[in-house]
Image (cartoon, rainbow, N blue to C red; front, top):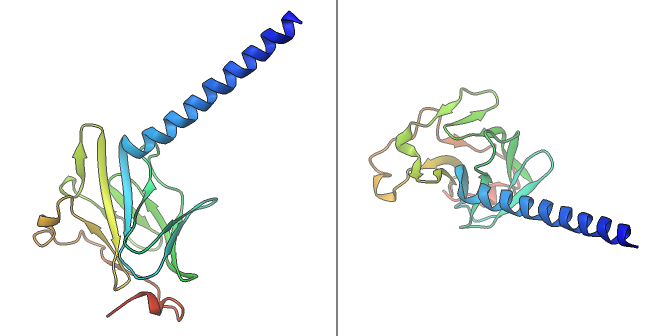
Length: 165
């Protein structure tokens, strides 16, 4: 009986340690390292999809698309109203890779830095364009978009209702 209790304690302790590690990794990725966000300024819900997962962004919502614990995202696509708007996207700390186009490189001026990492925020505009937001809204007028941006979404009959103008 004593051996059974010891084995049970070891198993419980192992489960607790693994649970703590998983929780710490998840929390750290949201607050530490190089993070990339997407703000949905359209009037429709959009979904940022990768190989086995997807993140929904409601109008006006900002979502995390690349946590700080990964160097580069897997291939991603952005859909709106069941139409693919952008495909073949790879987000990383200093560049956006788009299949079939040159990489969009972001100078450090575009990154919002802190002691625990950097953030870069993209905006999906009401016109269906993917642009990068400067770290400070006041500098938005002074900074032209990096070469290769804005990207225009693919046109589709169901997605036309998501854009205005």
